Image (cartoon, rainbow, N blue to C red; front, top):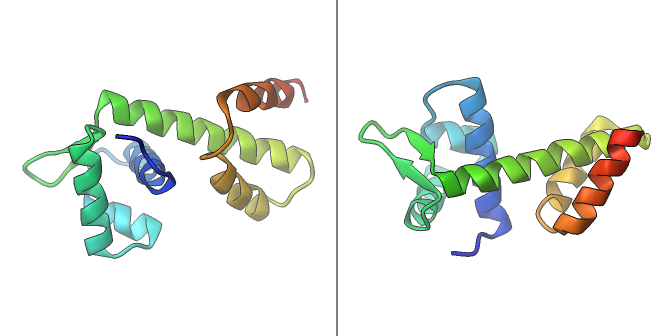
Amino acid sequence: MQLKESGEMYLETIYVLQQQKSFVRSIDVGEEMGYSKPSVSRAVGLLRDGGYLTVDKNGGLHLTEAGLEVAERTYERHTVLSEFFMKLGVSEERATADACKIEHVISAETFAALKKLNQSM
């Protein structure tokens, strides 16, 4: 299953929430992202069917190895891009908003070069 931007966003959100608390439910994801319960339920079902997450008997969401890989990659892109843009003088709000869009389309090659440049700044 090829993930779209929205799938990556859900996985990244679950990942971030799991860093903050040990038990993450669909309702937590919906509240964080501002999405309705039906929208989150549909996305969770698609991600589960795609092998990116599991749902335990208590409704807890757990990233699979594949889901964790996507979530960590997306989150790293988000943080590195945000940091880079802020170093350029972009406001934090605009930098994070732009990073959120770009993190899904930037190539691995371009991201690696940008990350290297960011580290040298």
